Image (cartoon, rainbow, N blue to C red; front, side):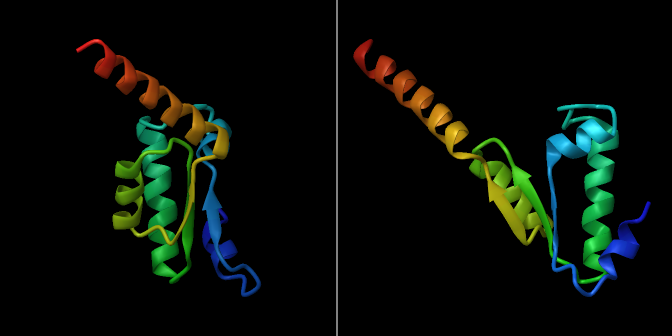
Length: 104
C-alpha cells in the first residue's frame, strides 16, 4: 500500500523482493505460482518502472531460464541464488550425469 510513497524517497536507491519474505507476509509461504504472489510481483515491478526505480529480486533457485525471464521483465538487480543451493543443485546434476554415463 505504501510502495509508491517509498519509491518517492530520494535516499532510497532501489528495492529487492525477497520471494519467501513476500509470500510469507501474504500468508502463502513459498507458493510462488499463486496468483496473488504473481500479481504482487507484477504490481511492484510496474510501480518501479513508473518511477524509473530499479527493482530487484532474489532468484533463490539457480535457474538460468528464470534469470533470463527476470531480466526480460525488467528487473535491474538480481541476486542469483545462494552458494549452498548452487553447490547442491550442480552436485546433484553432476552425480545424475555421471550415473547416466556409467550405465550406458
